[in-house]
Image (cartoon, rainbow, N blue to C red):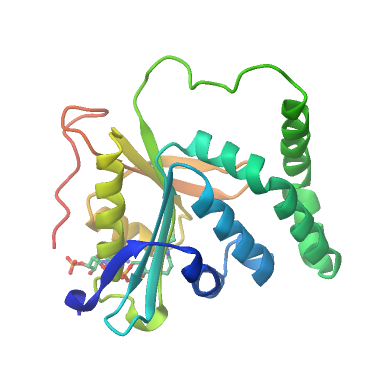
Length: 234
Ligand SMILES: CC(C)(COP(=O)(O)OP(=O)(O)OC[C@H]1O[C@@H](n2cnc3c(N)ncnc32)[C@H](O)[C@@H]1OP(=O)(O)O)[C@@H](O)C(=O)NCCC(=O)NCCS
């Protein structure tokens, strides 16, 4: 089964299909409730921003099997997303929420303040002469995997592993010391990450109040932590 999986960068031609698959597979996420147009725009913003990790898996007939998203420099990547597409994303979200009262309520309670604050900072930065933050003194370089999803009827056939293998290789090629990700504690995906050699690294609560388990994957021998990753058996 694994032999028929091809991994390549996510391009404009994949946006509609990949974002629709995301809404279907990760339907428990807030993002998935924000409408197909928002999701497509979010994917476009993600892929266009520098430092994106964005890959699709397709089979030999070109059928979409799965997607992985992440970033080699998450802070720079999200700043670029907000700068390039933030206003359009907020407008789309507000429009969709106007027709979906339960989403509007959720948005107001968990995110509105943060999103409006982000936009206000964006507008302020347009009128400011202050230089962009440079990232400060050189510390460990930590990238992030934010979403991994595989079509329901192809889960368990090696697609997720193939996607993460290439994402990890991209992180290494970018000179990262480590990759991190978070996953809800009740999701079976935790077992998948541990099986592939990711280390659970405690629990956290997102800025929107959701609980997550944090996972790390060391990319450099002798880097952060001790002893490297446990083996990821095949
Ligand atoms: C989680 C997910 C991405 C895994 O992808 P997948 O294609 O199903 O997994 P693979 O077939 O590549 O599995 C790779 C290995 O992990 C193992 N594995 C898969 N799921 C596992 C689990 N829940 N617990 C333990 N091991 C698991 C497989 O047995 C396989 O082992 P092997 O290579 O040694 O034979 C996929 O099932 C999915 O999309 N789930 C729904 C969405 C989701 O939960 N995404 C993660 C959000 S944080």
